[in-house]
Image (cartoon, rainbow, N blue to C red):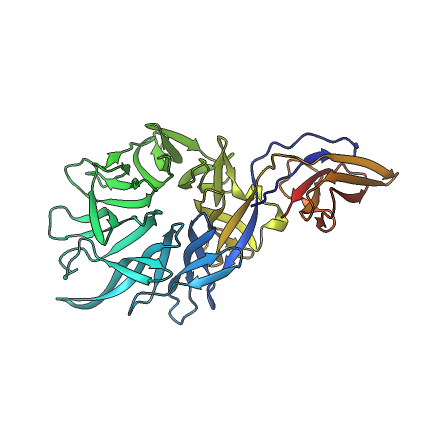
Length: 448
């Protein structure tokens, strides 16, 4: 995959500057909705850049259906529902295109026929498979009646949670690990009241993370590595939640601090690190981490709105500030980042132009494609062609497509295109601009 990021130079002074040390830049793809729908959300992505989530289906009841979106062909596939069901939600996907989530299922017990959410596994060949209740029972009115699958690894192991017996002393929900057709009860972290647990993510080593509830029904982040659930503690507050884990065993989530602020955390090497907030913002929660250690989630911005963030190189960035206006698609704000794959591609949801930030109405799923720094910056030269014109020349790769952009202030996040894109036909490319009375800064983008 080819990547892009600017090479910065000051053209007005006819002096080439240094490489701009900046965070990644992104191009946003609006994933749209299923036919007839108006809203969508994205929750998972694999290393083939396939995205899963849900979208209203446009039916008369406004039911939501799970979807699978494939890039770059841009198709959003409706994954349907379980037999006699009406809705479904997809939450995770592995590199074999196996999808997990939950959907309503019809069951009959001593009280009659009802529907309840059941975890599902979707595959290209097998369609949507009902994983049933946890623990398995023929009478969900007595034992567990619902399950939810939140994550799946490349071995097909599934993590989630389900309702357990109302009548037993150990009531509520329990995290599970599902494999080979069997639910394994992961139990709870050490606590005499056993108020339950929920699993949210799993890595390729079979480690599971989520929350376990204490005697006060406060949730604590946990890590499962084959034995009892390990309580990961907190950032000083009463509650914490573990939402994501990578193959290195690094865990991300959120926690209350001693000052009662909710902050994103990274748990690694036995230490929970506070990731803080975006500049001048308030609060944050982390939901995904890839193997290189890039973290995504959402955070409060100075205006009080939730915004998607990426945490990289020790800094939390508002994702919206890393996208130029001409690369934002139809979005006015990206307010939630759900997951990030090992190539750094991010999925989540935001609000399209004309809708209120954070509103369900106008919400659309997005895919953010990174534009990272090339290891071999182009050789650049700027010369005055005349008293009112400047010409740029840079080294290229034949058939690559470039775009020259400019801004008048390096503190601005919006850059303007200088003319159209340039497709290299030989080892050098050219562009020119009229000299104005205002200072301009220029950069070259590798588009493809």
